[in-house]
Image 1 (cartoon, each protein chain N blue to C red):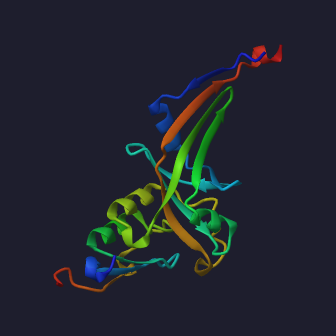
Image 2 (cartoon, chains in turn brown, blue; image 1 turned 180 degrees about the horizontal axis):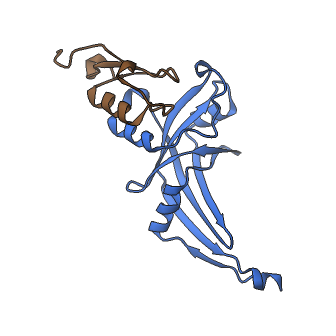
Length: 56
Length: 153
């Protein structure tokens, strides 16, 4: 996923270093279910906003 | 002559066994070469699919096998003497590219167990962690009850 396809956040897992670009639904799922790669619980701090959801 | 009884597991029994276990042996075939490894998995009983995180190092034999889209079998079994149950799933592993990860994938892998047998001792930088879905074309289970009394005679 890229900002051109709806990515709003850059996710960086503090445990395994996995990085992904995600939208808000994926962010919420990662906070609820943990890192998709290592399963570690992640918080809001693992996400950096890269675009506004209203961006064209 | 053993008087063991072998029966096929019903769909519900097969799904139950796969759901309450979290590890199995994944066998991969490439040309005439076999490769088998213990793995951890998550199982979606509704879709009858397995979700796997597979870890390898770039030059490893495992990576070479995985890169070849191998035919695969996954074996899960349990022993509860005198009853033995096993499930064999047959199909092809499908890798999920990172740019195709969806909310549903995150939820499915959240249910999957961590890769218990995988190598996490090395630096994450040196490891290649990839996500796979195993959607079996055939899933079959068996239950064998050993008749110890009659097997002794």
